[in-house]
Amino acid sequence: MAPTLTLKFFVGLGLVCLALSAAVPQMAAPMDDEESMHPHLPRSGTRGRTISGEATQAYWHEASKQLLREKLSQVRNTNRAKNIILFLGDGMGLATLAAARSYIGGEEQKLSFEEFPFTGLSKTYSVDKITPDSACTSTAYLCGVKANYGTIGVNAHVLRGDCQAMANASNHVFSLGKWAMDSGMAAGLVTTTRVTHASPSGVYAHTADREWENNALLEEGCGEQADGLQDIAMQLIYGEVGSKLKVMLGGGKRNFYDPEFYDKGRRTDGRNLVEEFEALQEGNTFVKTQKKLLKVNATETGRLLGLFSSGHMHYHVEQLADPENNEPTLEEMTEKAIEVLSTEERGYFLFVEGGKIDISHHDTMARIALDETAELSKAVRRARELTNPEDTLIVVTSDHSHAFSVAGYQPRGSDIFGAAKSKGQDKKPYLPLSYANGKSFDLYYNTLTNEREDPVALATGDFDQLFPAMVPLESETHGGEDVGVFASGPWAHLFTGVYEQNTIPHMMAFAACVGDGLTACQNASD
Image (tube, rainbow, N blue to C red):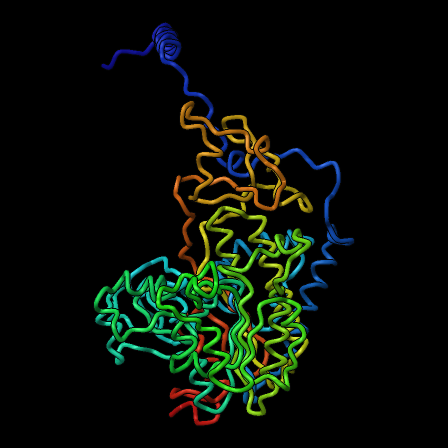
């Protein structure tokens, strides 16, 4: 018979368990992951830049209904596009757009092109890189072909620096500008960078290296193989496409002159390409100041070349600060280009680049990048005002993004350039705007003490203030994520969805009935 378990036994067992539990250290209560991910932040003293009625569900319900009404009332425009305009915000990623809204007045604001009825996303990788540069992307969104990093207007048989492959004309690919001109339309380009820089040169050039903007750089890169090859500036003046462009406005004067003619000239062949341009054809007009540009009579001008700076044009904020500024704004150049091109009865293609968004991001100067984005928005708005959406297709996109982010949980209406309301684990504040890498690393991180510097103490409020970078690099890098595409006008509905970047010129050509591909003027099922 099994022994009976007595009360004394159970009492003893309980005492043993109590002793063991006392001897084992107790685990601390686990940290609430939700609290660390979504912390309770101190409330702002004011509601900030909120809109009357936002606290009610009725406000948001009505806003949604209004958007639905707009969507339902949209009628697809299937007219042939007489004119096609491609705007490029170089380096204008989605984070840049979000931050720019705060910069222009509030998170609820829209840039002009964000009002366009149709939007999509473009995949920006190149044939050989996950994250591309502005050269190979210009080949994609202008020539309809993806290519290799650093090359322009050539296919992927050409690697960067391959002079022999560049010389092979069968490797050359042509832009939407040429497709348009072959159909009897005019074409032109506008940029705030050098007109021989990576993005605008995609309109007219074929080169194995984006750096070969003048003969000295081409000869340095190719040596004896440079014989018979044209540098990018030479291709703008004498190339198959460049020699026919009606409007060319931007910076980069140095690549067109030998120092004999211009003290900042970079050519070494004794040539003055600007003078040669003027002599090529009666009516060819060269301007180098804002005043001269604004005085150009569109009906009396044959071809227009404007070079307003030695290198890239100055930032808009620099132009404002300089009482002797003689450079036009992007909006002014865009308006004049449209005036001149509109004299062509058969329509036109125009490429417009806000190129210094990219350059300021490379230098981690976020304040300037957002201002340059706002300037692009002004130029787009003016272009839409000057043209008829019934016959003019306008597409706005970017070539790539940047390693730029908008972080933290700052209140609505707060200064986008100020500190976040919370602090880091090191008890120091941080800025909502920052970069994954770049030249500002050493400014914000003390490598001797292995500590972050207080970013608020370093903030100057100046337009050229650098923003924090996490990895030390001489120049901040591009980002590899998709970029936005915004479209208004004939066949704008084609630009919805997610697609390869090289599709963009084919869709624009379809709308304008140019090029050798499918067009709206033929049966699209052929």
